[in-house]
Length: 235
Image 1 (cartoon, rainbow, N blue to C red):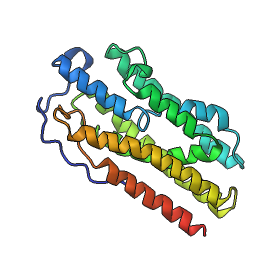
Image 2: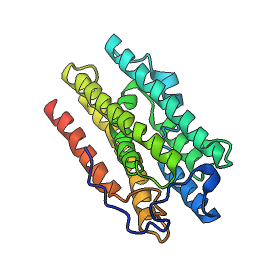
Image 3: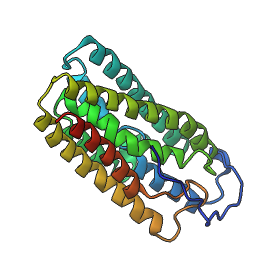
């Protein structure tokens, strides 16, 4: 999975890598916080803690419980990593990022069952994996270091979601119509994040070497194609 990442041609700070104590100016910090806000739900998993707390043991098999419990641990680690980044930037927690609390609430509201946990992995984490890959060479060194691990973790989470959804559909653990209905909810929610990210990339000032540009909407379309294939195979 993954649309090609297009190098950002507006690297105003060249090849420099900044640490929290060497930020070049306030504008750079503002761009960094804006990027983290865009990433809050798809990359850093905000809002998913509540869903896992409520539904982690609601699935049909022991294999499902084990797989989803591992995903929950990753969610908690992601949020811990984000809060660590923000602490160095003078922000108390992820709730202080513009729009992050609303995105987290939307995730919690969408995740009404154990099926939603798998769709969050396949759809939301699929987009999150692409956003993380775009930051592996970030000019903000702490983000680059974390993104390298996140890119692998998110790709693994997406793959876990695909396995779980295929299992549901092949073994008849839930009606295909229910999976389709829940998938539409997640595609709509994550579609708003992809559109917002693409809008931000087209605005003046996006860049500063913080992330490479990529087509988030196209990335989501590829995720939907994979999901449609799973549903079609279960007919």
